[in-house]
Length: 294
Image (cartoon, rainbow, N blue to C red; front, side, top):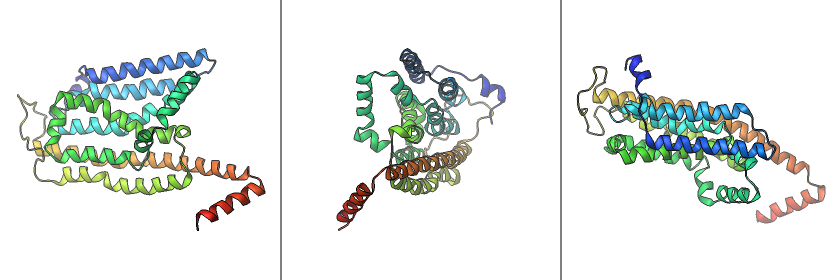
């Protein structure tokens, strides 16, 4: 493992990440100011969570040790990508960026925001049935020679740096910002089943990386002189598998808890909607249901 001074002292400027961080921070700050101008106070702790936890973790992963050594070390690259996908979006989501946009935007802006959120592509990629499959497809490339290209190609690295957190937000925001992604309790139950299946499937790439006795990307040397603490190629692959396996398993637990809370609120909301119906409206609804079942 790397010496402690290397871990805390390795820094770089990742321009793609810097662009994402600065643009996100500026937009969030403008949203806070616009909301204040409209007389809506934004909680300070959500601001702190967005900047310190969300953007802070994004900065550490892309500009700190994982970003500096991601091209040479499979396990550093795996740590960076898996946390960008699973952890950073959850921390950014604590800042509730969509709720802030609703508090800051005028009527015309809200209409455009609603149009984007209701688009079929956004709806498709933001449900717990589709989004995890994209993450699984990404991690499956770690089992191929493409793994080396993703680590070393500057264009691929920039696309992953920007695209992976955005994909993670599509997975996290429907659970955190449930008011903008409301689902029926029946649909959420189906998502529950899928998440439990995903809990097993997500671990497959990590398990295969860990247990395989061959270097799957066929790169067994490091360009230039490697530091003495660098692991061998096979050990590096095994460490990447350990990390991917662990992260994919452990991150599903808070997601399941959040989904359970979401299901509970959805069930209460649907129960209240039925309680508000008159006897005649309830009879009409039952009759309509029976007609559809024929």
